[in-house]
Image (cartoon, rainbow, N blue to C red; front, side, top):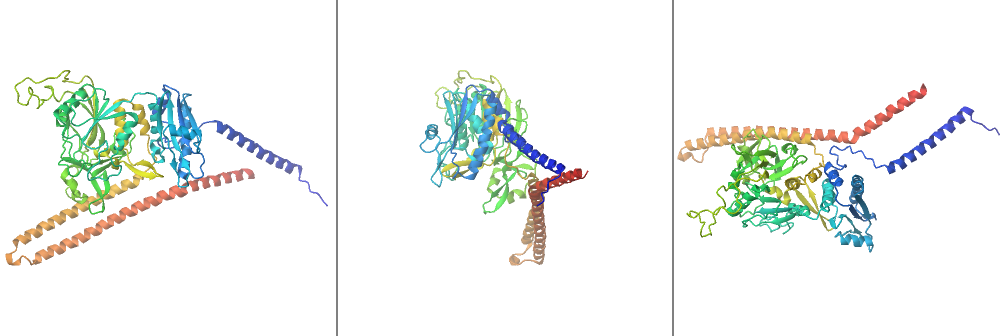
Length: 630
C-alpha cells in the first residue's frame, strides 16, 4: 500500500488557506462584536426620514426634567400581525436615537404587559389598554412620557401615522416639561366641537372635528360663542372659522384683541361645502369691517378655478371627473420659505376664495398657498354645475391667486370712533345724539406687531378632507392623506411661539408619487381641454345657426327640416365624429405614454440593481482571474 504525501509547498498553501479562513472568521466575529456596541446609522433617504430633526434635538437639549419614555409592547409575537412586528422594531430603533441625543436626561424603558403581570397594571394606570386579537390574546402597543409630576400618553401607536411618529413622540416629551398649556379660543359657525351636521354623513357622530382633538393634546381649547361680546385676555391665539353673522360687539372684541398683540387664524370661505344644504348663504360674511382694516380685499361671491390643481371627484352622474373647484395643491403651490408651509407636501381646498391685498394696505402680506397661473375666478353658483360646464367658458387669468396669506403689521382699529353702538342701550342707540361710549382702554392702534393668518377656505378643517378612519381590531385608527391638519397645527404652533415642533411635524413623506407621470397627465389633459373647448364652441355655433334657420322658416314648414338644415346637421355630425375620433387618439396616446413610463420604472426597480450587482461581481471575478494568471 502506497501512501501519497502532498508536496511541501502544497501543504504550506493548504495550511495558509485554513489559517486565512480562520483569520477571516475571527475578523468577522470581532467586527460584529464591535458593531453591536456602536450606535452608528447612515440615513440615505431624501428627507432623512429615519433621523431626528433639528427641532427634536433642540427640545432634547433643553429638557427641564429627567424624562422617561415607557414603551408597553407585548413581546410574545406569535399572534401579532406582521406589520405591527415590523413597525415595533423600527420604533425601538428610532427611540434609541432619542436616548442617544437625550444626553442622559432621557431614558427608554421597555415593558412587556403579560396577563396578570405588574407591567399590565402599569399600562392600565397610564390608560394604555390593549387590543384583543382574534386569537384571544391581548396586544399592547403604547407608550407614556413621564417627567416630574407630569405624564402624557399615546394609548395606541398607530402604524399609519409613521410620518407623524417623531412629532407625536417629541410632542409628549415637550408636553411633560411644563404643567401649563397655551389657550386657543375658537369662534366658529361650523360645528367643529361636535354638533351633528344636517345632511352630512354621521360618521364620527357628535365627536369634535379631528383638528380640535389634535389641538387639545397640546393646548387648552376654549369655545367662544358667536353671540359673545368679549375675548378673554387669557386666550393666547384666536381662531375664526367660517365667521358669519358676528355681532358688532364681537367684531369689536376681535379688533381690540388683535390690537393688544393677539394673533389670529381666520378661515373665510366663499362657499362652505361642509355647511348644511339648507343654509341661506354659504359665504363667510361676518368680517367685512375687519377685512377693510387689515387691508384685505376678498370677493366672497367667487371661488378660484384652477385646472392645474384640479381634483378627481365622482360627479352627480356618478362619473369620475376632474373638478377645478376642488383644489389639490402640491408642493409647488406652497411657500417653501415660510416656516408654516416650508415642508408640507399637499393640501386639499374645496372651493377656496382668493385673498387680495388692498392697494393702499400698509401691512406685509406673505403668500402661504398660491394657485397656478392656469386659474380664474368663477361665481360660486357654478359649483352646482359639472366640470364640463366649467371648461366651456374657462379662460385662465395668467397670474396666480393667493389662497392663504400671512399678514403682519401694527394694525389700526376698524372702529376708530370706539365701541359700536349698543342698540339695546338707552343712551347709545343708533342715530342717538347722546355721546358715544368710547369704552375703557379702547385702542385706536396696535400696541405692537401682530399676525393674521388668513385662509380662503374653511372646509379644509373638516375631517373628510384630510383623514380616513379605519377600525383595526376594535381600535379606531386614522390615516392622513394630505397636510391639511399639519397646516393648521403648524400655524398654531408658529403663532403661539412653539416653532421647534413645526419642523418635526413636516419632516417629509414616506410616499413618493410619480411626479413625471403626473406631469405627463397634466400636459395631455391641457391639450385635451383645448380640443374639448373647441368642440363645445362648434356645438354652440351650430345650434345658433339651426335656430336662425328655424326662425326663417314659414309657419307651415315648422316641422320640416330644410335641405340647408339637414346639410348643417350632417356637417356637424361629421365634424363631431372627427373630433371625437381625435380625442380618442389623444386619450389612447396618453395611456400609452403613461404605460410606457410605468413599465420603464418597473424595469429599473426590478432588474437594474440586480444587473449592477451582477456586473460588479463579474468585473471583480475577471480582475481576480487576471491577477492569478500573472
